Length: 187
Image (cartoon, rainbow, N blue to C red; front, side, top):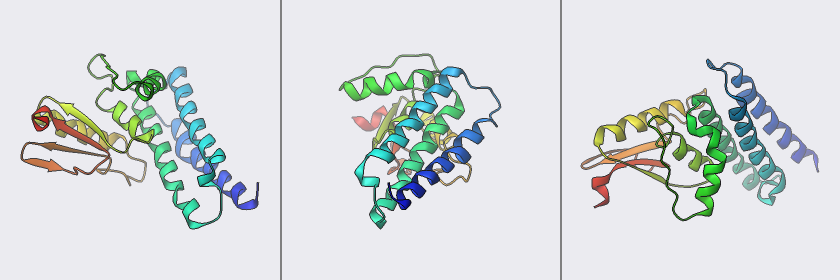
């Protein structure tokens, strides 16, 4: 490993330390052991990808240009951890099932994270566009707002850019990675 690769890896480790590990100690509610293990699994996944995939190796601009996307993934994983919704502890298994199956049905209690947590995790996993269907206009707007507020990093850089919504006649940020729609738009 050359000096540049060593510096890049050390910088990634420092980013994780400053933006995730230290921030984790500032949470209002103590996370469960399972949640911490899930977060560590996601961090390890990003670290492994960074260390082993050739597209990240090198000192050309194209190699450095890919790094912000990895950092965004880490921020999204941490945002999901931070809100501590019930689905988070089983998110690794859910994501595996979604990846392996063309159709996956998820049925859990209200407030577990089906509409807020899961779409963000899918974006962090590399899905370019996630569409979430809601039965009414108001939930589309409110859930979108909640996702944008809770899944931002400390600097607020991703605020209002992660999720958008569209209901008949009106839309906000329809090109976002996560789009909340009413079922009427599918007809």
